[in-house]
Image (cartoon, rainbow, N blue to C red; front, side, top):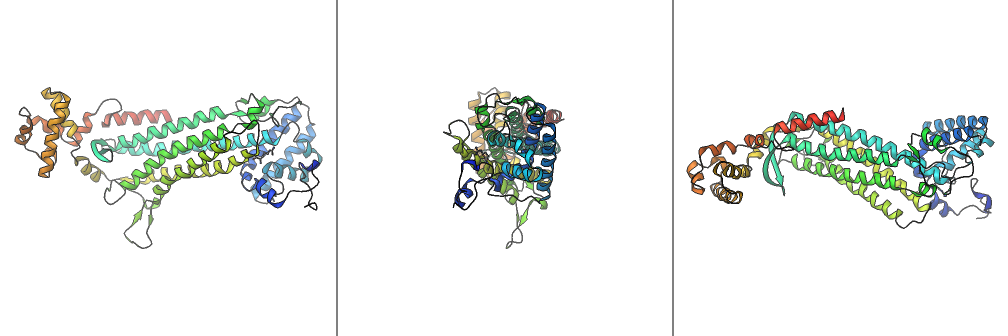
Amino acid sequence: MTDQTSNQMWGGRFAAGPDAIMEAINASIGFDRRMAAQDIAGSRAHAAMLAATGVITDSDAEAIREGLLTVLSEIEAGTFAFSTALEDIHMNVEARLKALIGEPAGRLHTARSRNDQVATDFKLWVRDQLDAAEQGLVALIRALLAQAEAGADWVMPGFTHLQTAQPVTWGHHMMAYVEMFGRDLSRVRDARVRMNESPLGAAALAGTSFPIDREMTAKALGFDRPAANSLDAVSDRDFALEFLSVASICAVHLSRFAEELVIWSSAQFRFVTLSDRFSTGSSIMPQKKNPDAAELIRAKVGRIYGANTALMMVMKGLPLAYSKDMQEDKEQVFDAADNWMLALAAMEGMVRDMTANRESLAAAAGSGFSTATDLADWLVRVLGLPFRDAHHVTGSLVALAEKKGCDLPDLSLEEMQSAHADITADVYTVLGVENSVNSRVSYGGTAPQQVRAQVARWKETLA
Ligand code: ARG
């Protein structure tokens, strides 16, 4: 294809332009245009620094600044013509700048390479997403706190193996997710601190001979400091991997909660009613109200963790420094970020809108011999039985109740005494689910007073 002109940005040593398939595999403009604002911010910081250090003139820097603002407004207005031949966002912006301001545009790339440029742009983009995730998590935690506070003393069954285990409170169950999303929040904040070093000025891989000021560009872009090793700065994608890892863990939490909402909103459970705003109907079965948002959130972990796996595989075995493989980082991160933010927002909306059905929760809390442990504990505490013996006595009473088709509190005192002669009527005080949850006052336990204390602690933490 000798008739095609070589690339205007790097084509000096090329006699011919690229094959169409080469262009197709090489171009990233189809997706990296999402980093336009970050690219222009990075270029503005770089140009201002080049002027401040005397590498370019103030008037060139001013022309570049003005021109970049025009490019940004064209992109924002949707009038910018993106070109595949220009490969990526960096060269699209620079080519347009050249068309707008002429010669000074060619000075912008002094002491810089697309390698430090793309690392900088991408870091800025990921950092914005960490900030968005922080906001989404805080909103979700607040919605859970409101649920926990309203139902701090509502009883419900607690499960292990999805079999009724012991009664817990609604508030306690909600607060379990507050703890999970709280850890996600702290991971998001940790990741942001760790990633916040500027690659700009690392140039292609070795640094530059121009007297640049990397502190200045780092500061202008909100980084804490410049990255300390130029080889690492251009080839590090840890920040993207960490973003995807944090997102994956959070997506697992979202998925577990989503699964509970799917179960709880079924006709068999009726623990919660999801709002119409976050449910859908069936095209054939008129009675149906489906928890689609919860199901989709349950599924999102697949693509988010998929992105994490994909980028891990892209990065493994790459020699230093930059390799084009690394261009494969963005689509994974973009897709994961979009879906993570959407899942957080949808979960927050669902939690804010949902109604816990107090009566259904209470009815379920008392079934399935949920206070058997309380009975065993009573035998230990009042009669002084070793726990293992108490467990055995209680087991025989559960078997008796099961045979009779009743619950533990429905057994008569005589029936109780058939299992152990010393049992007194006092035992009935511990068989009610309210008493059961009220008794679990150990730190972190399900008693309403503990739940309220945790709600208060979290509100203070978030304030
Ligand atoms: N589009 C490229 C990427 O996303 C930009 C960096 C290209 N650098 C290079 N030396 N070809 O990774």
